[in-house]
Image (cartoon, rainbow, N blue to C red; front, side, top):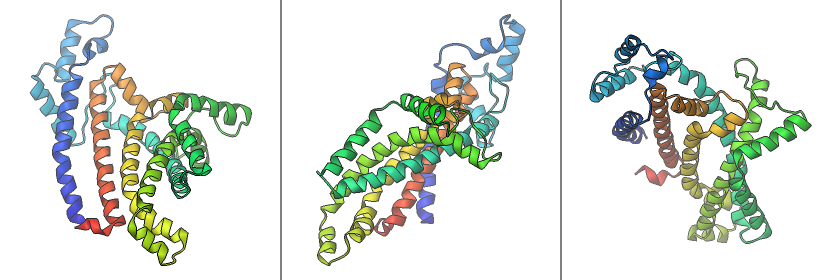
Length: 313
């Protein structure tokens, strides 16, 4: 297990290096000059020259990259060109919101999607299977912002059970924190549950046709034991892969949901930094998301081994 983790970490180093080079190079192609925006309406040449020196924008591009990556390795992702705050501080303030939202949404998705996928596979071609497929297709097709607005009208305006928007930190009030995240997590979780349901169903149908499943049934094992212990365990590998990818997408892609429910999350910060040409924030955010994806892939590899000991070799 330790050897596997070390190998994956070593493979992650060139990947991160390549990602950092691509991010730094592509952001140079963005239109506009952030220094002109920072200099204000007067755009004093002396101020512009000072800002370019301060942010090393007069240096050659390779020197700018080396300066940025060397600071990033020490945990310094630079200063926001717009707010003058450290990028690490901005990320530390926004990431927990999206991380908590993503975890809650993934819990909803796993509970709903996997259970529906197993039932649909066991009752293949029955009315239960057709109904779950219809529900899954609806969950994938419905836009998040539209579903969010409907849930706000139902649970916030009419029933008045949950707040329509805003965010209460976990440190201030656990019940209020959960209430503010329930609706957005449900919105995100429905789409993920639909995707997980279809993949779980396909994986379970393939496994249920295997010879060892027929053998287990011939031995007289309880149907529940055959399905949950033998079939589902071997169908988990593609489900784990999909779950890690979906969770990684949530960290950087919950923009519309955060906008509808006015959540000060990570996704909204990404969009704002791109529109404001805040290069330091864009670079730091993409680097953090890339690290998140690599860590999730590492977690998936570890779970593969834990679920299927044959993969340890």
